[in-house]
Amino acid sequence: MGGLDEVVQLVKRWGLADNEEIEVEPLSGGVSCIVALVKSRRGRWVVKIALPKLMVKEEWLADQWRIFREAECLRVIREVVDSNAAPMVILEDRGSHAIVLEYGEGGVTWKKQLMEGVVDPNVTDRVASIIAKLHRETNKRSDIIKKFEDQNNFLQLRIDPYISHLIRKHHDLERHLTNVIAILLERRMAVVHGDYSPKNILIFPDGRLWVLDCEPAHYGNPVFDIAFCTNHLILKAIHLASMKHLEESGRLWQNYWMNLKWDNIDELKREGVKVLATLMLARIDGKSPVEYLTEKSRRKVRMLSKSLILDAVDSFEELSKRVAEVVVEG
Image (cartoon, rainbow, N blue to C red; front, side):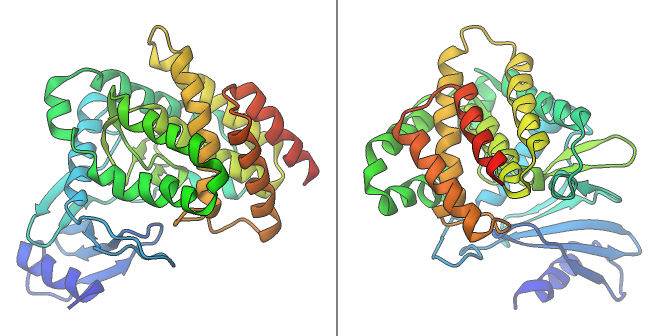
């Protein structure tokens, strides 16, 4: 049993449907889980089943317990950010490595809007505010640290397939990338979502904004999240040859730090820029490359990100300036 058939059997076992034909539709967007929309007379839900091997070209294994870290993170977001900032967790099935979530009727991903050329500063501001509040409100909370201190999911889902994989491909970057790994693993300050990207932000017609898909969540260095999200705007700016997308990446970056409201953040900012440059390369030569870049754009991003890493650029203004030169070239 596997795939959608497994979803049907689990839904029946959970009692989420009566003796009826259940509608099951696969949902796209990720590589780590079977994700399906389930419809029955009782309602609509999203079912997620963690896969032991992720659906990418190269071998990528990860412990399936990560799905329950996602459930815990979604609960924390609803608690400390806003009850409307993430879907409700309906059910967890430990034996099947599965969870059931509230379905977001009518939502559209921020990625879809950005890829269609739609840039809305109000959305960008809220995206920055949400992740800053998650970091701010989970800082130094002992109960949170206890729940999220294990970093194995982050190692398996981000450090190894993204950064360690780069070291295996780009030996000239080893010293710089090893330093980035230390930055991410040794500074532990807040709950890190770990997959804070436009595809995991759902926008609703009524103005709500949901944060989704946080399997890599852990207690760690918050710069990862803002670097991860900013990177996606930068890559889309290069893909679309769009200065407005690049300008929006700057808006996201600046608003995050303003909303964080922490003192003495200069060092964190510098670390964040180094992580950002690394992630630019990771989404080209890591195990999970972005799917929309042309080979020409991939070469440009590879050359740009390697220069940023080798030059140890730690200023967002300098990084943005160099990206702008690539965007203008088209």
